[in-house]
Image (cartoon, rainbow, N blue to C red; front, side, top):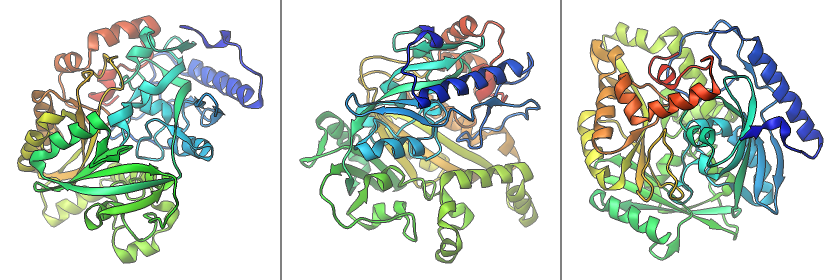
Length: 461
C-alpha cells in the first residue's frame, strides 16, 4: 500500500483533471471540523436507512464522477469513485466491454458498490463488484489518499465498510466482453426443484444445453417461480422496449422468450425500480403515458420516497383513513441455496410480500472477505423484497425487519446493510467481523473522524 501521489501517471488531460479533483476532495475533508460527521456531497443515494441531519458541508466529490480511461486491449478501466454505473457502461459498451458485474440500478456508483455490496445476474459466475477491482485509491480517515490492492489489509476489509474506512477516489477494474444483444428465457421452475436447478446452472454454465451468461429470477407466489436465463447474442433481431408502455417484470410471467439490447438488459429493472413504481401509480396505463420517460428511473422514485419520509404524507393518509401503521421492509438478504425454499416458506407466512427477486451468487474464487463473510465454494441466493407491511403501533420498532434478521442468520445467511438494521452491538460485531474492522479503522483513522459501521448501519448516524 502506497501513497497515491507516488504512482507515475501519463499526464493526460483526464488524469490531470482527476488529480485536481482529488485535491479538492482532500481540501473539503480538511475543512470539516473535528467531531462533525463526514459525508459525501452528492445528489443521489441508494441507501434506505434514515440518518441524522448534518449541519456541515459534505465532501466535494464533484470532479470524481467519470471514467478516466478504458484500456480495450487489457480489458480494464480506470474509473473515479463517484462514477455511476450508467456513465461507466456508456463508456465501455461502445468497445463491446462491460464491468463483470453491473448492479441493477443506474445511479449506483462504482465506489458505492465496492464499499457496499453490489449484485446482479452475472454474480453466479463473477461474484461481487469488489472481486474484479485490481487496485484503488482511498481517502482514509487521516486525510491521506493511499493506493491499495488485493492482499492489503485496507483493501480486503473495505467491502461492506460503507465509508467507515474511507472513500474510493479511483478504481482500476476488469472488464469483460459482451455481445450487442441478450436473449432471454423465462423458465418456470417447481419451487422444490429450485435449489437443484440453480446449482446445475452454476456447475455447468448451461440450462438445457444453452449457455447461461446471466441468471436471476422472480417469485410471484409460493407456487409460481421463474428463473430468467440470459445468453449474450451477436445476431440482431426484433428487440423489446421496456422503457415505454411495457413493463419488464410482467414479461417474466407473460412470455417465454425475449430479446433485448445489452444496454436495455443492464437497465431492465431500473425503469420501474423492479416493480416498486406501482406505488407511484406509474404502472397505470394512463399515468404511464403522462409520466415523462426521463422520469421513469429509480433515482426519481428514490427522491419521491425521500420526500415522503420528510413530510410523512403516506403515514398521515393512513391515519386519516384509519389504516394501521405500516413498517417499511426494504431488504436484500443472502441465503444458502439449499435453504432457499425454507426461507421463502417462512417469508410467505411471516411477511407475505410478493413478488421477490432471486439472484444466485458465489464468491468468484477462494478468497473470502471478513466484513461480509460469505463462504467460498457455496452458492447463495440474494432475496430482494421492497415494500411495507401493516403492523400497527409497533411499526417504529421494526418487528418484521427484526424477524427477517433472525431468520436469515438462523439459516446461515447474511443481510446487506444499505437499509435499516436492528442488531445489538455484540451480534453485529459477530456477524460482520466488527473487531477486525475496528482494528483496521484505528490504523487508518486514528482520530476517529469517520463514523464507524455500527453507528452508520444501526444507529443511523
